[in-house]
Image (cartoon, rainbow, N blue to C red; front, side, top):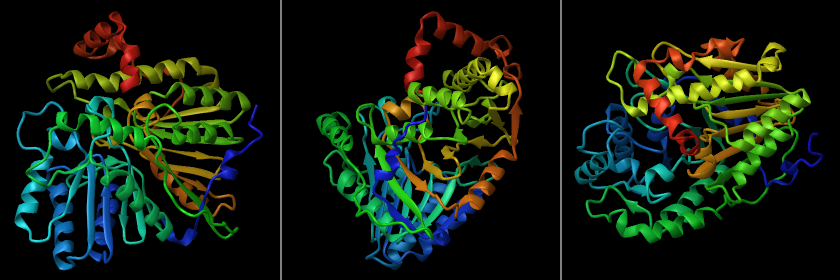
Length: 446
């Protein structure tokens, strides 16, 4: 049964001119647009991402920010990154300088400094990170699931494919900037990583707990606007934790009201229970469901068999196991074309897209991976778009076409590899995980 109540009718909305909504199609376009916006900024630049990496692309972005700040000292420039991620190296790398070291180095060299706020969503990274997205520059929001480093910005040969939308809207920009200022930066758990003197995580343990509790109640604040038939409606949403998470509720409701089609992108196939349930219900209602997921070799944790194996390299195989089981359970839906599963793979590039389209009327821009970790642990946000007059349909159809061009359609679960065909170190790891029944626990934090 489709719910008779569309709760989105009661949501506060921001009116958006469709002419001020633009989709970018490549990581290189995203990098060029971000740099252009930074250079032209006159009022404010707020960058919020999981991390700003100490590599060529990360340094390029930070250099552009500092150049803008030196040119216009009154320019409001603030960066927010995850507290834990900024103070460790890459997974599997040797200990040494961290991203925070780079932030301090830049601050020391410039007269007009830029704060880089470390946001601790939980006391330990494994139990929750800053996964909020949005680059607010003057009165525009560049929204993407991408972080800032070489591969996300296609600085060299390889790229990590994501979604990129540019939204010109002062109300949306103000609301998102105010959330960063009032709900994050203002809290005593949040500290400037560009300062040499900063507390340890242990020192702020109680502050972090209080901060997370407050984040669970936080919302984007704005006055709701009427939306004409010449406009589309935007609603920014935020959520953290499994209790009373408005974003999770919104995603479930979005799937529940689908009548014709659902198009889902996720890089890591591991749906939360409630999402899996809504997808099953939609299929039973006769809704056409399309799922685009990265091939295991396009996963950012994938390690080619020619390289030494590390435990983290088992993740892409665990996701593929989930997908194979899902496809097997839905073999009849696949055969009848009610369910289409597309595997994305393009050379040695990687896949990081997230988002949901419903009935060509509702679109969700989000960094949410639609997995239990996003559902229960990380601080996530999204922008819900209601487009009842199909102003953006051509743009989103072009985006979907762009996404699907490097995919393979799965016609049967047998196209996906069995565990017996995995490299021996991966088989060993999976046997070990299954033997101690750790796979259930792992599914909740992956």
